[in-house]
Length: 388
View 1 (tube, helix red, strand yellow):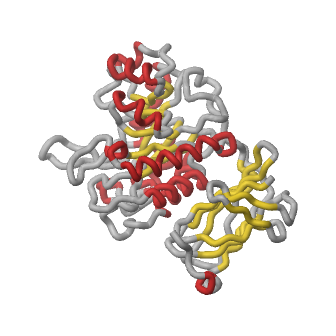
View 2 (spheres, rainbow, N blue to C red; view 1 turned 90 degrees about the vertical axis):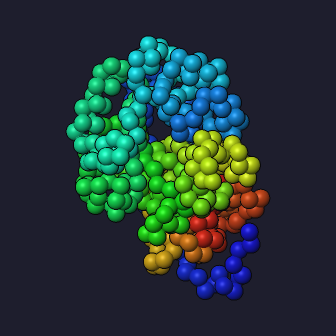
């Protein structure tokens, strides 16, 4: 897509982004997780939610390297199929799973999904209260006692990002529950899908993804690890994110502190399709390209963040960025957090003032001005810079 005309860009707000000098150390995986996720710094989790193991080869070709959840599993057949495909899984700790405690295919255990939402009372009986945090914490202790060699994953609902989510029933508008919930997991994640969302408070506002990650990082604190879920189908809506919107949500997540992604690939409209991503050539190509880029930058993403801070005089537009150093290069990852075009000056501390930045994946370079990268950002645009 073409950007706004230069004369228009000149009238858009200029966003000045600077970073302090504090070094934030990335939290290391628990040393006790002998059978947990790979410790390889070149491995970054890009997962799919609740998929049939028979489709694992197709997902692997798209850059997926992890399954999260198994329908009514794990079963012996499911684990055998994943093992044959070389696809690890995080699954429930049932009887079959515990029989495979020595199987490297299983790299983590998980709670039931979204315990923070109102829970079904049964067919035709409506919904009751969410599962209390103290029950989740007790279940976490039980899971860790049965197998302390793997992390426990807890996936929460959209109340992490949106206080008004009515699906929490009597606990709607009670964000104070979440600092307690996160005590019940080693890896904590959440899901919100802005493009497919039905409510105007959220619909189309991709920044809700970043807001949820930021809050979860704050509530969880080190050494817990934060992941999040990304939409890439219609789900139950008439709307579907574009590949560019998916990329924006992905990089909003990563820049905000997410250390793993779970793609939600189910679809209920126009008919149910468990693996709708695999049947959507355009989106599949987009997700494959995103994953390829993430895996190429995995060692950088897993390295400590040198600095992060965003300052802007403009209330409606905000470019958020982080700086990392790896392999003799400085990386600046930036995303426009609002649905409005803007210019940004991104300071890259510690580089030569007139160095040249390669814009990764865009076949262009930018000469720094006074140690800053000046660039144009379309609405929700992502730019990734590498400075030697």
